[in-house]
Length: 228
Ligand code: ATP
Image (cartoon, rainbow, N blue to C red; front, side, top):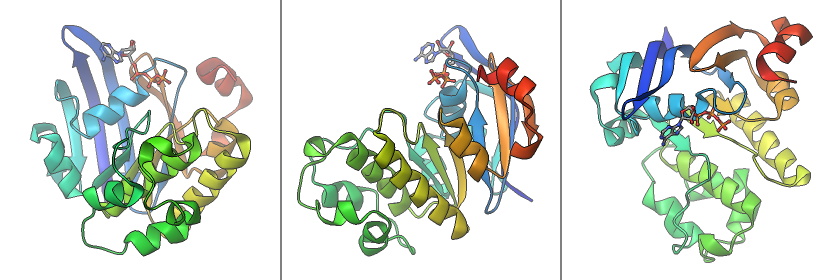
């Protein structure tokens, strides 16, 4: 059974419709890449799944629960951990305080997340505002992990980061996948996504237009749907 099942999802910003029919499934332990050009609805899909955007229609089922009727804190408690676009760490809080603010019982503890990102361990007492962009992204992922999520969502996992830091983040994501973590990831680094994803879902103008294994993605499809 799917951990997450999204069917015919529509979503609205006020009177403006942004999603017109998104279909997306994630099985336990799967890494799914949500792809598409700028403005095609990837972040809006994440907002609807996490219930930060509640004006939606269609089916969102997570672990058997109907998320479409729940507020975002309930979605988080059911086990969806989000590292959002723009990171959104608490700038005035230390790394340790940021991590503890989201902590829930489970295998992901301070020791475990600093094992994954040793640099965070060296910066525990620094405020998030003083971290580099890469360290802030590590903190955003670590903070989502501290909720001990069944599903981890990474929106723009490596956006705007230096190549060497990107590689660190991709290596961490690979380790999470090896550990059986279910992951939905959005990023513009298509080659990394293709190498790591079990499945790709491509959106065009708020609709799912292609789903398949990365190996089935032809260069013609990539050019047409992703502009690669
Ligand atoms: P990007 O790769 O640029 O982040 P995206 O695929 O994540 O793009 P979304 O940010 O989900 O795309 O945007 C989908 C559509 O919804 C776009 O037409 C966008 O202009 C619109 N949109 C996004 N956020 C808002 C908002 N807060 N209010 C109104 N419209 C919005």
